[in-house]
Image: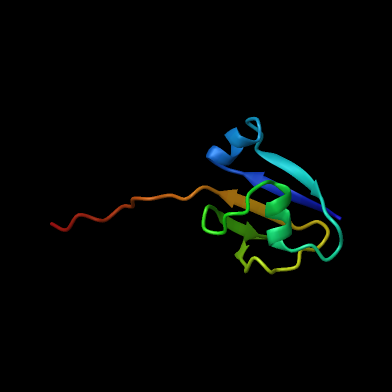
Amino acid sequence: MQIRVKLFGMMRDRFGDRSELVLELQPGATLMDARRELGIEEEGYLVTIVNGRYVPMEHELKDGDEIALFPPVSGGWAAKKE
């Protein structure tokens, strides 16, 4: 089955400045299997979303699913009270 992977931030750099790639996985593969195929096994290292939703690493992928990989971010914005 084919899974589309969208890459953001430093993940683009890691994969040769590509914004997207396609993975070929066996039926029944999980999100963790996809991350292993990409060489990303650290669970807390990235925000990983499937079809626009947060799912557990054990989530079984389906043909045509889209995974988005976001590097961790920090900081934030707070409104200033006057």
